[in-house]
Image (cartoon, rainbow, N blue to C red; front, side):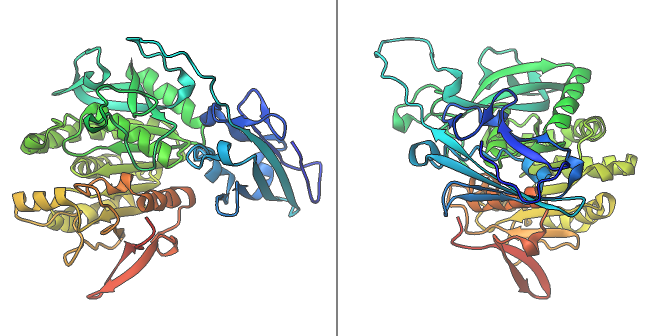
Length: 468
């Protein structure tokens, strides 16, 4: 590895790219078979406490560059996961790192180095008939995700059916989800009959690889240890209506990967029926689950010892998360200091109830940033509005929900999918906006993906068109 410094001092902070075992430099290349999740920019000389400021610019070309403005920001993401998506190993020979730091003493230093890139092309194999999947681990990326669920455990050998739709006691575990190298931002690749795909293939599809159950003590102990090692950051995702356990696991892994989130991903799966015709059953079950969700949140906030905790809910899942949070804050107001941000995406909640009862209590009791994503294109919420006879909190347009202390982001026009309901996780612009929010902590006025909207004496934010 080649270094260049200014003001080299005995208290210099020196970095290198490694995976804990080997250093990557101009001669030891990153390859398309490297496990990027284990690669990190490590401090090999000096201490983090010596740094007053830090900036890292990673460059493949003039058009492909990423900037990190703090070392903690870097540790909270997976900075190399985008290499495969940009076909870096096919199109580029090197990736360049430019690190600029200022020490507590005031001295400024610069460290530059290049790491070579190498594409490994597998040798042609003789095609034989086989009834078993012979795919090797390195043919896809594995994303471990922690989960809590109050669904019944079916013990089915098919991991897609491992947890059912019945109510049960709260249980804990870890699921490993594979994501193919051909993954496209925002997608959950699944088998398609139109493509004559009749079974899952980890080289093409996002799929569950393993489920491991854990007792409560082991679960939180190991989670705390991982968080302490991986940037002390974590997010909790609560899914919405018409979602199975497997659906929730795949979505949590996709969010983790697309956000390049380097902390601890966690999801809570309540007993949604996973069927469009069971809307009223889901409504009853999310109301039932809020007590378990509150107890889980209490343990999650107290036992993990994370510095940054992001709470994310989608659709009907917002009903459980918001009510559980308010109940928890009533019982343990001191836990508000554990929360960094609450993100409410397309909430299927009565807009008037949210505006009058829920949002003001959350703003007062949590006293932390709350971001609300809404859209006028959301067909699922349009259907819910017709069923209930009242607008939903996730609706945009004339009755868009504006509450002091909540930043409302209008995502209308950015999602062209069938229902336009999962735009928070499926559209490039929204993913980039959430990534910017998590990485930098910037509020809506400072995020480049957004523009101010003022009408009838209210102000909210809209995703810029043409950015998706």
